[in-house]
Length: 101
Image (cartoon, rainbow, N blue to C red; front, top):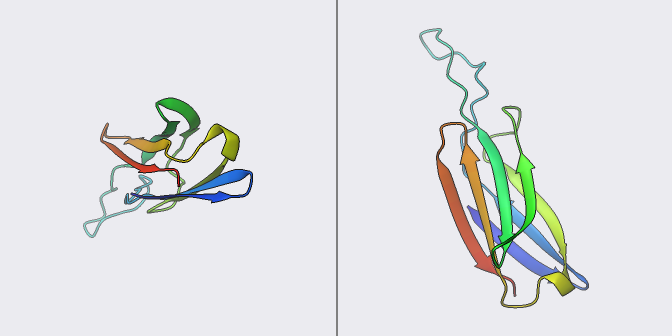
């Protein structure tokens, strides 16, 4: 996962690029069998341990999804630790973090 948190005046713009294949469960493989669904179900962003953004996704989200959201700069002082965690439909998780600059 690539996370960028850039301060722009009175706000902090957070951009996240996630690496995930995101199968929707409708595609057929070479033998004509349906490829099982496998997608990110939940994304949670925490700032110093406090949840600041939570999203619930389904199978229609694109492969290697990109997410952007905005925080108020006053709520995200420099040096704050921002972590993003996703959980997929197989129960796998990935978590990465960055510092607010």
